[in-house]
Length: 375
Image 1 (cartoon, rainbow, N blue to C red):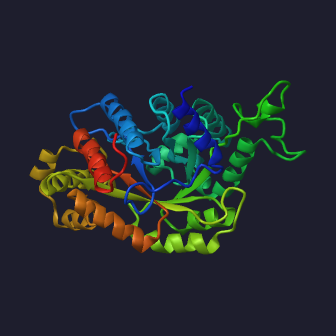
Image 2 (cartoon, rainbow, N blue to C red):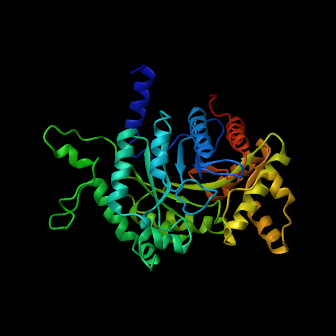
């Protein structure tokens, strides 16, 4: 192992919670990436995954702190139905950047399966894995019912605290004596250290709670967990949810004080008109999703030719006003203002735009605008 690699490994080990990053350049907080593995018209899921690899490597080289993949189902324009599989793919192609789920929708899965998947990821990329959890299905009700094998998929969301506690027990391998799962172990995991000749790994994926309302904000605070809020699609709830998280926070072994990141839609382009065209295409994609017509993300040309109804125009104005877009200087100013208004500890940027080259260029431009380390 080279000396630089040794120092990198030591730096990761010394970061006990694996949560707090370092702001580089003039960025007000650490900057991170949320990837939906966007599939646009005229491209395939293979193309989208190749773009994800390129974006994760770019993010790592420019000093972004973490790279998360979101779980969605039954959406042709989003190829991230299996975050753990994608994260394994990215882990094999990066060296330092933190990788995680933003998030895994816990009610869709048995807690033991998630513990096994993320224990395996942790073994693949020690000290680099985050386990972000949500309670929504990440899809429509019918698909949620198919995933959860029940006619009442809402039961899973209502049972979220119990599922979370069970998952945490599996990750720590600490079910109490007499519990029916006491002799069941998530492998890879801590049980291996108790076997003859076993060695305890110093790492365990930190659990994050994700949300777009006050429910997960309060729960994350009460449990002393880091919190990620979906500002990119629930902007009106951002400040109330963050306030609730901070007011509810109780110190834990993981965190001594609150730590909250927010997801932000942002797109920078060399020319403002390019950013506007890309955002218009992503808005049209969202309109179709919200009206029960999910599909591939349309091209900018298709969006330009589309005739928006008055109701759709109202939605488009509202939605695009929450996307920080324009020239690099405009985007930097918008992100700075958002961080000041919310007090977020970290900004996680997403760009669900159709043109892969524009998306990659956007992250380069944002990194340049803040003076992040050169590739």
